[in-house]
Length: 189
Image 1 (tube, helix red, strand yellow):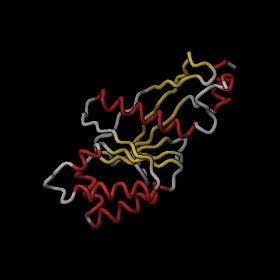
Image 2 (cartoon, helix red, strand yellow):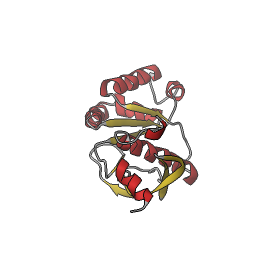
Image 3 (cartoon, one colour):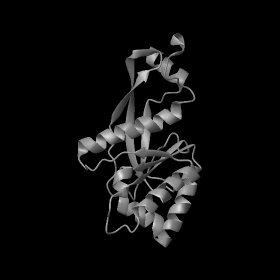
Image 4 (cartoon, rainbow, N blue to C red):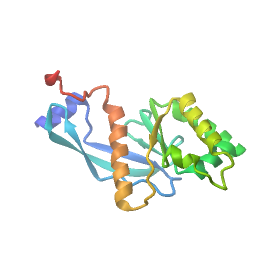
């Protein structure tokens, strides 16, 4: 068995991961074909992991790893208008509350907000009370115990969505591997 395979087995590092993308995503984030993580026993070496993307109807969230379906689920929110509609229009608010309850059942629920808090507070003729929107959003984060990812990217370019996809897959895999993997190798402790 190669040293890479021994390391993978010891730390439960997969050779391939599958990113499941909800079929309702209108502009899905792009994920790379491969990613590299640091070898946990030699920080100068990398382990390559194949990444497969698969569209599937998800009951909860927009992105997750098929190999770890209840570990980390990411719900994506595009901006101020979408958040306002989801949180203040009655039918959407009820549906969204149910969605947040389901999301909170996973081990590491995450919400990707594609604007900054300052952008949420910016005056908008379609949003009656921006501070109430920020309050409701903060309350939801606290109530459901979600990890918040404030990533204000506006570009739909391949490079931008690819970079965001690379970060998200590292995050999802990081949550999945954190039980078996330390940041520093055992030999350095």
